[in-house]
Length: 356
Ligand code: IPM
Ligand code: MG
Image (tube, rainbow, N blue to C red; front, top):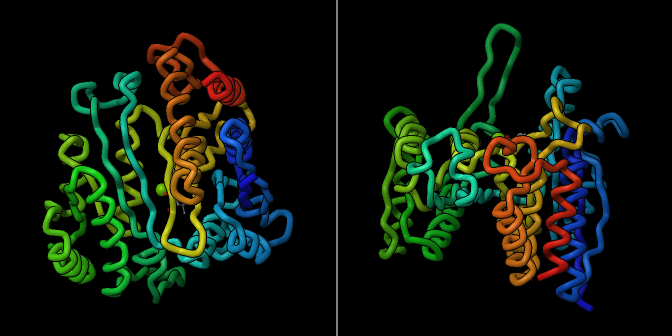
C-alpha cells in the first residue's frame, strides 16, 4: 500500500481543533482510496515557546523537511503578543516558510453557491467568483533588511530581487494557463521602486506566455476592485504584504474566513494551511469552522501527494454537506438546517466520504 509521511503542526488557539477534524477526514478518504498517511506531530508557535523556549524548534524544521507534506493549523495568541520578535509565534511560521523555501502561497477563493448570501457582499456580486491569489511568501517587507525599532524610530525594508519576482511570476503564469488565462499583477508602482522592478519583471515574463492576458493594478485600486467586481479576476499575482491583506479581504466573498485554504509551495515540501489565524477568542469552545483546514488537506492530497481522486472526494463531500444545510456557528444565519460544532461537522463530512 502506498504510504506518505505527513508532518502535522497543530499550533495554537483553534489550531488543534481544526487539524483534528482534517486528520479524521484524511483518514476516511485514504482508507477509501487505499493509501496510508503516517502522521508525526511537531510543535510550532506559542505552544512551542512554552514547551521548549522557542517558537520553532529545529526538530520541527527537520521533521517537515523529511516529510512528504506538512499540514498546519494556526499559531499566535494574546499571551505571546509582547514577546521579543524572534520569540513570537509568528516568527516561527515565517522561519519555517523561509527554511523550507516556500516562496509561493496559493490562495484560491471560490464561492459555494449555497453560501452566496452568507457573504457581506451582495449575492449577485459574489456568485460565481473563482479567483486565485498567488502571494510571494519569503521576501518583501516581511523579510527585508535593514529592519529597526529602537523606540524612537522604526523602519522595515520592502526588498525584492529580480530572481525572486521571476520565480513567483512563473508560478502565477503557469497557474493562469491552467485556469482562465487572465493574470492581474498588483503592486504600488506609482510610488515604490520595488514595485517598478516587479512590474517590469512581470512584463518580461509575459512575453513567454502570449496566451495569458496580463494587467497591472495598483494595490489600492485592487482592494477597491475586489469588492466592486471580483469576477473580473482570475489569477492575482502580488507580493508578500499586499497578498496577505488582499487575501483576507477576498475571503469575505465566501461568507467566512473559515473557508479559505492555502498551499505554500516552491520548496522542498509543500505546506498546507487555512488562511485564517488562531482565533484565540473562540479557541477551545468547539465552535471553530474546520472547513478551511479540511480544504487545505484536500489541496495537500492533490498537489503534494498526487491523490487527485481523494481530493475530489473531500471537495465533493464538503459541497454536499453545505448543500444539506450543515453549518458551523460562523455561518449559522445562512440556510442552516443544523448548526454543528467543529467535531460534528467533521463527522458529517467523514460520514459522507464513507458513503460515496
Ligand atoms: C497569513 C498570516 C501570517 C502572515 C502571520 C500569522 C504571520 O496572516 O498566513 O496570512 O502574515 O503571513
Ligand atoms: Mg494573513
